[in-house]
Amino acid sequence: MNTSKAYFILAISLITILLMPLVMSHVSSTETTIIQQDPKEIQSPISQSVTVNITVTNVNNLNTWQLYILFNPAILKCTEIQVPPNNIFKGYEIFFPTPIIDNSAGSILAICAITQPVGVTSSGVLCQIKFSCKALGITPLIFGNKMQAPIGTYLQTPNSNFIPFDTFDGMIKVTALGFQEYLFEATQNSKTYKVLILSNSTVSSFNYDQYLKIMSFNAAGTDGTRGFASIAFSKELFKGTIAVLVGEEAVYGAPFENQTYNFLYFNYSHSTKSIKIFLTLVADVNGDRMVDMADISIIIDAFLTSPGDPLWNPLTDVNHDNIVDMADISIAIDNFLETWSP
Image (cartoon, rainbow, N blue to C red; front, top):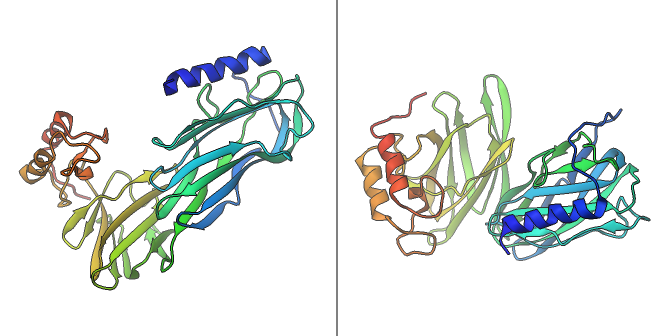
């Protein structure tokens, strides 16, 4: 069964059992209702499992909840979602169909409802999600498509009215022996932002140039070993296409983002490396802040490749559809001879 059909069946099943239409109207509340991950930040070794509670606080007359959660599938794999016995609907008969988990796209769709036309006014656990930690890095858990049905995160009363709420994305850090957290500050327009780097390298000499939009640091390690860096920083610092240079070589930063932060993950061979992260143009494959024949040549070298092919280069997949084809070359041509400037 394809994902679209599964979503459709899930939505129709809920409507059939509850015999209620999805009507989008808001319910007033004297306190802010919040959906969030508990604990808000989790750190786990690679190859281990973590269990995350998803909670709601200060909710009034809750009969139905749905969660659409996004995560980085390169770092985590969702293995189980359950409603624990001591959940917010404890004491009521519930409808909890099998959640839809897509570990390729990094998404979870889960829904739960009391089968009677009653609501709960309380705070408590909605569900528990179990992940296996498959790779090093930092990933948020994002509550997607707020107040949207059928694919979104929402809360409803027995009358199918939507309950307003806020969300706070959580964070999961997957580490290994020898990895350290480095916390730096970047100042832009007199406002200071935190930059978190998780790495097995010794990180030093951090700098942020707000005018040139360049974040730089040195990473050092034992020659002949691999270095890894996972970086989280505010989207206020960089808004646009991001490039990564290790020394003079452009590397793929494996980007992921939520509404607040950019997340990058990349690796390199150890020695002492100068690393630059900066804003650039779409189709600037080699990281020189312009699009020219050098970039088109690199794209052509990877033409018709996809992940798993020996010549696959993710930097050349300009439109991020997992294949390098004429669409990517066309984007490069559209930006030909463009140069990034502040």
